[in-house]
Image (tube, rainbow, N blue to C red; front, side, top):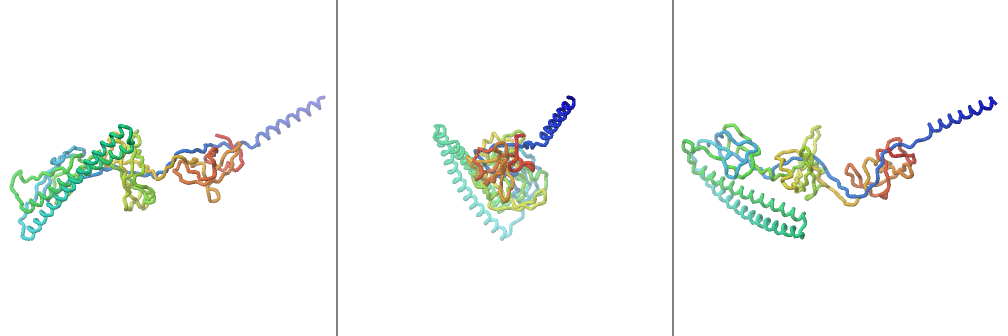
Length: 396
């Protein structure tokens, strides 16, 4: 009886040990991250740093050689068109010989012709501005009645702003030509007297803000020396220096998103106005020569949304190069190279199945699937060496 009990005991112990060994060495499912194949909108964009700049910057220069008195204006000061921004003591004028007098008279005639041309341009710009105002009022009325779309209203509003800027530029051109004519006439008949009347007041060609004071201290300056820059910070544009290989994918009118321009600031909408037709060489921070192209982006959102931006601020720009509303797509981490193509693992009945696929566009987060999937599969993300065709897997 004792022998029989001993045999039963050791037989049971052996079965328990055998069961433990089977459990220990039985293949267990590999823990993996899973994601569903999705269908929906997808877009691809090129991204790079950009900077803001005032669309029209006016450089105030010294009209004649002389001694510049200390400039009292500072960066950020508001100025009106025609307001004195600098004062200059002209150099002692010299008597004109016959040749110089002939050249001075020719300069006066040239300035008069340029003045007439500038006034004609101003008249054309005024006509364009009146038309843009009438078009804006018409579209605004249609939009209020529900006939015109918001996009049409935004376009005519942008056209109105451009026409206003063009008119301001033309007016500034007229004032500049007037000043050139006065300067040419003054060179022809110099009138120099002692005293305070010697001081020449240099006026601002347009209204706006002083962006930068280029020469602040009192010092001798040559004719044409830049003194300060004036512009309107409410009329900004974005300049994005893209690699030439990325710039060829961008088209005029492409949508853009401006981000990282301030802590907590919401992204701004933009639209490409121009891809400049020439490139330039730039050395990167790593010393690599890169061919870059300037892409000009206009801000679409109202100025109230980006009024904190100024001239020369850094931003991040993403310019859309392709988009579709209904695309079969998978996360990029699910893809890997296989036999010269692309493949991924789908999960069927708890097992990973190697599936070759053909991909299209890729934006770094998701990739377009052209063939190989139906859209109802679950795929394995970040498949490692432990995942192979037919192996049992389970969600992490």
